[in-house]
Image 1: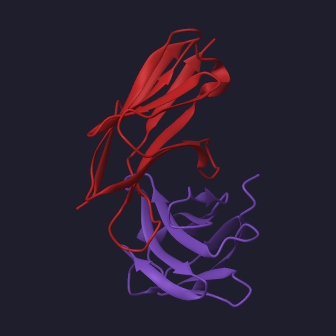
Image 2 (image 1 turned 45 degrees about the horizontal axis):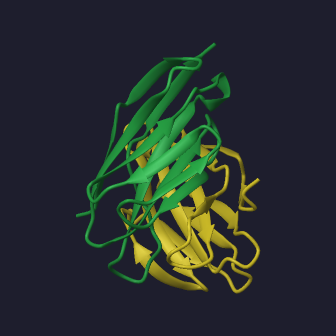
Length: 112
Length: 112
C-alpha cells in the first residue's frame, strides 16, 4: 500500500460529459502529480501541485484542469470528454523534488 | 527534450533464467533515475533510485546499475512472481519540479 488514495476506482461516462477524479496524498507529502496512462502512450505527466500551487505542467489538455486544496488533497477535472480520453489516471505524491513518487492505484475512465 | 527508451518491449524467461532490461535516456542534467514495477490494474511501485554513474542498488533478485547514458535492471534467477511491467523514469535537474518522465516499459513474463 503506497498510502496514496484515489477515488473512484472506475468511472464510465458518455462523450461530452464532465468528471472529477480525487486524490489523497501520503501523509506529509506536499507535492501531488497527475499522470495519464493509455496503451499507446504509456505514462504521460499532466500536472504537478506543490502545497496548493501549480508547480509544473505537462501535456495537459485545455479541457482538463486540476487543483490542490488546503488539506492537500487534489482533484482532476475532465470536461467535454471524448472517446480518446479513456485511460487510467494516476495520482502520485512525493516529499521533495528529489524524492521518488509514490503512486495510487488509479482511476480507470471509460468514455462511451 | 528529456527522453527515455526501454528495451526490449517484452521479455519471456524461464524460471531461473537470468537477464537484463535496458533503459537509455537523454536528459538535461540528471537528478535521478528511477525504476518502478507495475502489476496489471495497479499503480507503479517504487523499486530504486540511482543518482550518479557507477551507482548500483540491489533488492532481492533485482539489481539496478547506472552509466552516463543508460541504466540496466538485472534479474537474477527470476521467479514467476517477478512477472510484471518494469518502468524506468528520469528526473531532470532543471526546474523546481520532481516530475518523472517515463519510458514505455518492459513487460516481463517468467514461466515456471
